[in-house]
Image (tube, rainbow, N blue to C red; front, side, top):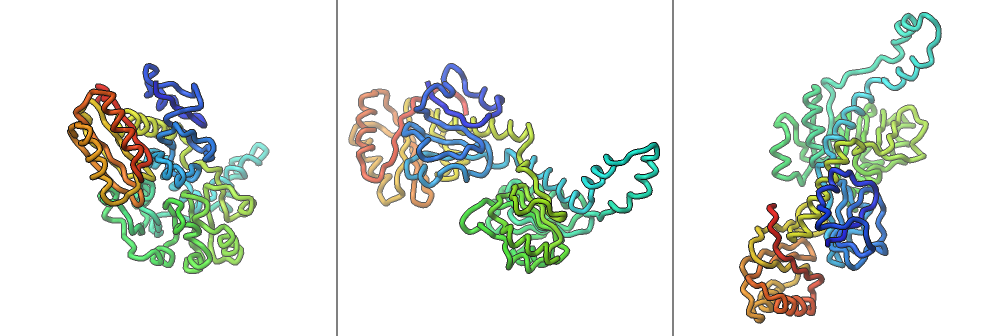
Length: 394
């Protein structure tokens, strides 16, 4: 039986894909896989038995990715599973930034008397707003979410400019040709009425938008952050808004310094908080984990390369190693020296580490165990696993 441990509530539509005949959930402290959402995972909580960790969400800041990589633990996320939920929240926030809808709703609730309709008509001018049509939106980061925001904002009648020097080919095909492409991020800052950021949190994106970038923006610009809190320098935002150098800020990340300000809207991290997004993320996380455990195939990993190969042989050996010269030759030689034929083989590297799948035409488990032992003794090999083929289509 494969052992899986979960943290947080993972949608049952995903967990039910782990068949009871093959998987035990939270039965012991030596799992092969961990599935979680927001739980901040400490290194001490990750047993040596763990092969992979899957987050039902996009960001992996709650997982010690670097130490996992060093230990040969594959970390997965679920890009795109919650994209529609975040996109809808961004569009809603754009609309709310130009129409004081919440203030109007709260005001009406305080009315009393038999002439409420007349009172509302007489005072509704205080809640007059603007329209998004014809305004210019800058989208920083054109991944799954950013591309959807850009396309739908254009359909709302906005002029849209996107910036992403690393946009993938698949995403490029999905973006409307009417979305302008900025050659430099400064074009977004200097020309747009609204700016929304959708990039992952990395060392180079920490405080991507700070005092210098805000100074480039129009005084009438409104900034939105539904990516990660640390991407925007909150102290710089506060200073700019208090000096009337920025019209407004909407964020999905609570910070006590941003509260009780009439031009700052703080949401309680609602981006992916829809039943549909949680279900989609759980399904993708479980499917990715299950495929890796049963076949060794890696998809949507944040720390190891994507590696996929049809599984037709009796056994498959998977190898995680440091990405050094002649490692593939050493793996092949060890298998050949044991008089085992290699049916198929694939190797991919990603920065300092590499991953290899080797399908072998061999059913003698003693011979296979001998090969695995020799591989594990080889310098720079971190983890070796043997998978017996199951008749399961993927």
